[in-house]
Length: 166
Image (cartoon, rainbow, N blue to C red; front, side, top):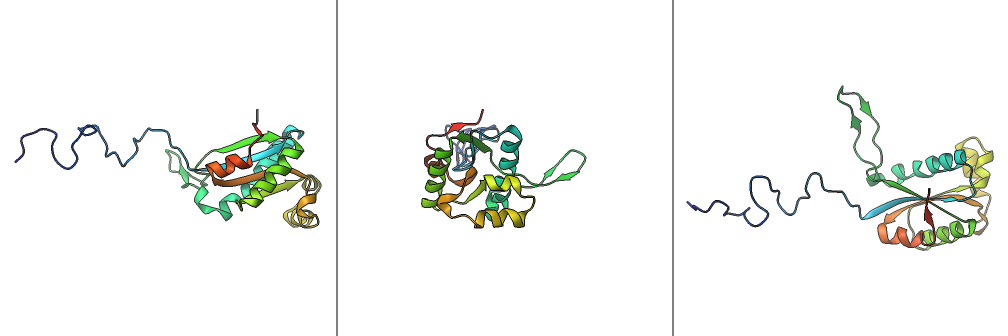
């Protein structure tokens, strides 16, 4: 039997009664994601439009990229709630030209993306929304919003020249 208090396979400078193996993060340590969910809004939108566009844009991510969705929620009374994204959604804004450039970058990097065009403010359902986007070529889309998901560095490159939404 070894008489040294902290010897054995789990001993070392990070061992002891309150330590965790170095391969496991501390339970209260900040979680850092290697991916990013971002929404880019055109800067001239009204407040209600910004909220509406953001909600519509992120709605497609969970079904197309299921790994972005966390586990269902439950309160202390065992009432269940729907799962939400496992990571924050960062919202940015920029000019019409910046949005067009970001869209081109997202396409060239083949990142999962969603678009919202100005035409969608005049439609009232999914069928008409899809028809409005389908009626216009990629270069002619009057983009007011773009959602993009992917590796942090790739999303950061897509968003270059934008600023965080106030």
